[in-house]
Image (cartoon, rainbow, N blue to C red; front, side):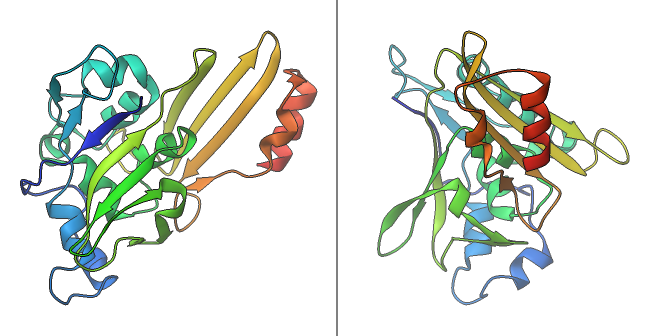
Length: 232
């Protein structure tokens, strides 16, 4: 069963990503998607969907990712730990970070390679959107006016899988990533069974790289790595 990052519905204070640019990119009538996505944003990690874990483990960026996230999704924990600095992480929320939709965010590339889904709730319906379809452009998302991001569903990784996140900054380590790279590799012996790559900072939105099916079933050699480089 998937682990999920779930909203409490309690407004956060000074969430990461609140900006005038974000508000102007969304319709400012009623409760705009920019405001609802930022203010009512996920703070908790629920462990109830994970086998043998019935209690909820509270999580904020301030205290760092929960042990559940660290054990099940270390690359995601690493990406969350690279957001800004301690001061920013003390007020940041998961939903605020994702709904901000800046092209330079840390968590989205990891969530893309993990195949995460976002649950959006509004007055008329609750719907699930794959994160690869959530970002439409700079500060633009699939959130409709009146909707809030209430849950992030992350499917479990296969035992043979490994994931990694690397952040490159042009200024200090506290800066936005000029390039964020997430990779997931599932191996069968010396052969690649699955490869996923995602990047942030290179386009108007985080990108999941297409065309990597060529690596499936292939031995991991320098030649294969050269082919993957050409695709990317």
